[in-house]
Image 1: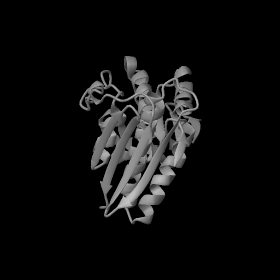
Image 2 (image 1 turned 90 degrees about the vertical axis):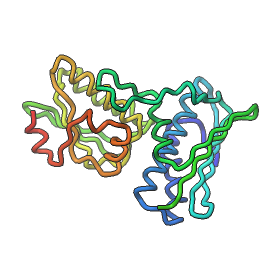
Image 3 (image 1 turned 120 degrees about the horizontal axis):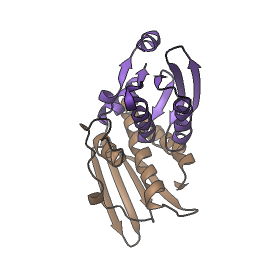
Image 4 (image 1 turned 135 degrees about the vertical axis):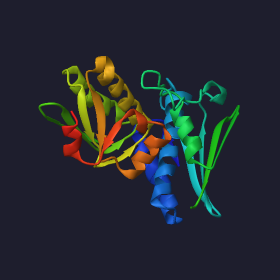
Length: 132
Length: 111
């Protein structure tokens, strides 16, 4: 499925992930985690990969392979350098708490595997999670 | 997403319904700012009918908590946080930044 790189489509993206996971018997708790991870990943693409780009689109596929769900997002925007994302300090007090990097942190915590490839033809994010 | 505000003598009770994501978080922030712009820094946030919140919503919560706690003039407390959202807040290390209550009357009475 191809989506415009606009936040208004996050609802549809979460619905698509939920439908696929529900049909494969994933628990509602895991479905929420999958929706959150997909939302955070799509948000990063819209906000960072396509920062300042008009009429951009990206694609998402969501499949069941064996006992796991595989979510793949492809974009042709700016590539993402994980090295530039600081691990959020979850112990910092209120004044020092930084919100940047929280999306990526949540994705890694919520999913079993997260893989990111970047090439001249674009960026591919692959996330998997096993049925509980 | 829908936000309603009820003013009490000692605090504002703000109820957020529906889904807060990158699309709706700006509106959520704006509603929270309305309270603080009016000098209301004691806020009870009723999350009982909140279905979903991403880190965009957490960001709005953090900004408001910072603003409210400045000069010890108040704080944001959360009430009736749905399990899924509590788990995500926990994962983000946010639960220790907010007092949480199961009962609205108790939360309002805490101010």
